[in-house]
Image 1 (spheres, helix red, strand yellow):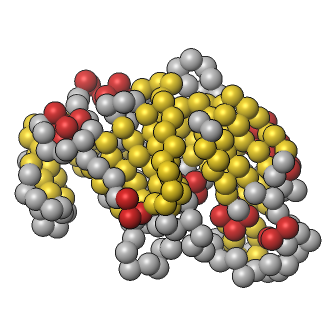
Image 2 (tube, helix red, strand yellow):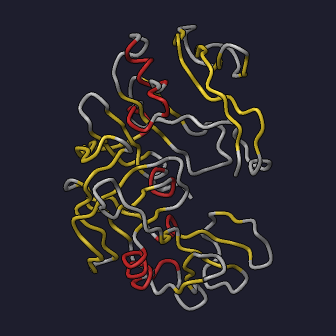
Length: 289
């Protein structure tokens, strides 16, 4: 994808409907507070995004990732005392037909969107939100331990080093589809209910995904898909695992996992820049299909 971008001074306020203007970006919200002096890149021409619903990217990493020494939006919000706490949190609703969809809160959390305790884990690097993950298991089978991971709403699937992802999918009975670059599970042989859970141990907290949560169902004669679990023992659909191989390393050359949307839809996430930590709690939509 090629983009022509131009840095630009502007403002960001929480009022009315979102739209681009010459001096900044307006966004709906509760009060007409305004972040001043915010710089952003305005796309003059862009290709490769014709069929996407969004029309921009809002980075929420640490300032070390910002270009040209610019201060990210969230840091400006905090520096200008526009939010009560230096945290932001995500609730991702897996039901795309729900009247109330997903939610991003700057400056707090929404306790109505999760249940139980929050498990916090300290960051090991403050660039992306990287932390140490104790282990990944399939059923009672340990896939690997002492891992590094980042939580990223901009990644759809759950990625990991190719050898580890191969072992994980092998434990699920999945085989690699080189054309799709994903693993498939034959659900005409194995019912969904017979497939094991996949468990992530993070700072002693146990975060489990069931088969209905880690498989994506594609029509075998179409590129469209849905997350329905009513296709048990069917030969009319292809079941893809959301665990996909991606060999990527951090600045210390550690191999990293990326916990994308298929994890974050089931677990509410809290990003705390003051204490350099990230928190997870079970989403109220954990069991939504």
